[in-house]
Length: 241
Image 1 (cartoon, one colour):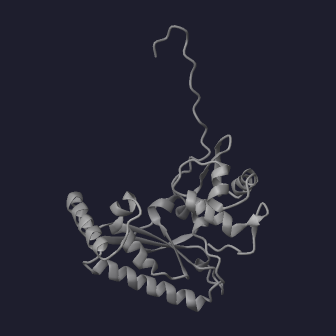
Image 2 (cartoon, helix red, strand yellow):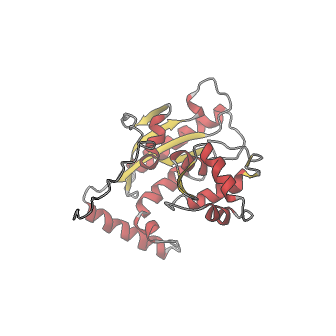
Image 3 (cartoon, rainbow, N blue to C red):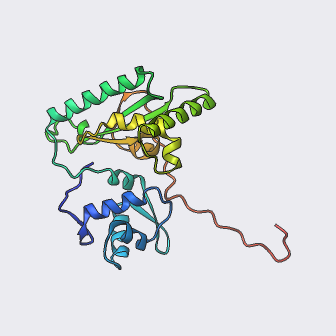
């Protein structure tokens, strides 16, 4: 996915709004004021920005001034603002990425294995000479089937990286070290590659045109986003339940 760096959302720079959503993507529920603070925007502009983001399907309103990010919004947070690629450049980036997948799966250093690679977005259209980027999603699972042994190896890797000067910001990074190490190697800082976690973005990816470059395809899940919320029955007076 690509965004126009000169575009705006409710009159405010889209890149600042994107940065705000990036900071909130791991927060389940947040307010427009939290969006203002995360994006460094003036006080009072949050409600209008949230309204426009909701109209674009990037976030969803839960209650009065409480919001959550939708799958499309998660994709937006990873969107690139760089210039479009030539198809030749995109093809080279994709080939190099798949070589890294082979490296991960064959190198015993890596504690994770890539089991799915899904390609989606503008690269799927053969008539597109200037794709925005190479949109990929990967599924990564532990190489060691026994969970306790896997955790032990992950802890050893964390200790090794800590000795080398790496700092883990929180316990999630510590526990997911094995996954993040593979993910970062696959990305390898490539500006041409827009990489997503398949399991986190599955609902979005399976709902749009895509092609599995590795692993089996799956049927698109039935969306429950707009399913009616069951009403709670009033208890009759004296009812103990």
